[in-house]
Amino acid sequence: MLGKVFKAYDVRGTYPDLLNEAMARQIGFGASRFLLSEAAKAGEESPMMKNLVVGRDMRKSSPSLADALIRGITDQGGHVLDVGMVDTSFIYFAINHLDCAGGVMVTASHNPPQYNGFKVSKRKAKPVGEQTGLAEIRKFAATVDFQNNFNSAGGRVEKRDLWDAYRKHVLSFLDLSKKKGKKIKAVIDASNGMAGTMIPKIFGKKGAGVDGLEIIEINFDNSKGEFVHEPNPLVAANVKMTQDAVIQHKADVGFCYDGDADRCVVVDEKGKIVGCDHLTAVMARHFLAVAPGSAIVYDLRSTKAVLEDVAKAGGKPVRSRVGHVFLKQALADNKAIFGGELSGHFYFRDNYNADSGVIAMCTTLTIMAQTGKTVAELVKPVARYQQSGEINFQIEDKDAALARLKDEFEDAGSIDEMDGVTIDCFAKDGWWANVRKSNTEPLLRLNLEAKDKKTLDATLSRIAPMLGHKVDH
Image (cartoon, rainbow, N blue to C red):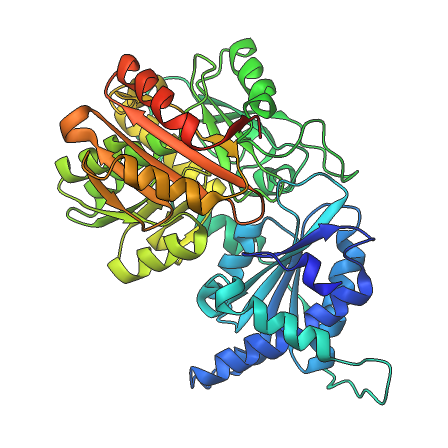
C-alpha cells in the first residue's frame, strides 16, 4: 500500500483508503531516520540536528495524520517542533530559522478535499523527491514493525509559534513607501486554503496592518476543510471568482492562492490572468535592479521574452528543467537571486532559495508601488509573442512520438533533451516548442510559442498530429 502514495516529489493519496494514520506513523519513522542520517552525514554538530519541523494544512484529516506522523518521528528518536496550521512556505522558513535537520508539511496542496499527503524537506529546506530521499523513506517506512517488541526511542515534542518571525521575514520583501496617492486595492482569493490563515496573520484583517494596502478577502474561511472551487489556480475556471471580484471592486490587482498557499496566480486590473512566465520576466527586472548582473533561473517552458529581457537587463539567464527540485538546485548552483516556474512557484535567494506565494505577492505589490504602473502596463512589453499554453495529448508510445518529432525537425533548428524534447527554430522560422512526457499518465505535454499567430497556428497544425489525441486535462 505504501508504494501507491509515494510520488515523484511527495507523498499523496486519498484518505483513509490509500493514506491513513497507521501509514502516517510509518512514514514519520522513515522520514526521521532519513533526515537525521542526512544531517549526521553533513558532519554538523548543531544541537538542533535532531529536530524536525512539522506543520499541517486545514484539511479535515490533517490533525490526525499530523499526530500520527509526529508519533512516528519521535518513535525513531527525532525531536519535533510542531508549528501548527501553516502554509507550506512557512515550513521552509522554520527549518532555516531554527536551523533544523528538516521538516514535513502535512498537505495535499491543490488536490480535492478527500486527498492528503506529506511534503518532506531536508536541511536548509532542500526538497526531497524520489531521487533525493523519498525512495529511502519508503523503504524505512515499509520495514518498521510497531507491533512486535518495538521500543520507542522517545523523542520529544515542542509546540512553537513562529508567526511574528515569519511575518517580519515576509514583510521584508514588501516596500510600499514610494506609493503615491490612494492605497493599492488587492483582491485575495484564499481558495478556502491556508492563505485564509496566513494573509491576516501577516497583513492584518483586510490589510489593516500594512500602510498603503487594502485587501478584499474572498474564500478565507478554511474551518471546514472544504473548497468553494478547486484550490488550483492554474486552472482558469478556478480564478474566475478572483477576476470577477477585481472588476466588481475596481481593484488594482488580484491574487488567487492554491490550497497550501505556496503558489499564487496574478490577475491584472482588467481582470485578465497574468502568465507566470510573464510575471517571472517582470520580477526578474526588479531583482536585477537590486543585484545587477545576477543569475535568474527560469523554467524551460517559459516565453522567450524571459531570456531576452534578463539578458537585456544585464542578468545571466539560466534555463532549468521543470520542477522545484531542479529550480532550487539551479538557484543554488548559480547563486541566482530569483527564479520562476510556469506552475506558479517563484523562488527567492533571500528566502533560502525556496518558493513562496506570499513573497511573490509582496514583490508584485512592491513593483507596482515603485514604478507607479498597473499590472497590465508592466506585463504588456513581456507578452510580445503568441503562446499555445500547455496542451495535453494522449498516446501510449510516448518515446516513439518523441523520436518522430526529432526526426521531423532534425534539420530545422537546434534540438535539446534537457527535459523532454525542445526544438528551437525561433531565429530562423519564428517558433520554438517543448514536448515533455507525463510521469504518471500516457500523456505528452506540448508548449509552443511563435512570433505571430499565423506561425503559431501553422506550426501547431504540423506538430499536433504527431503527438496523439488532444485531451482537455
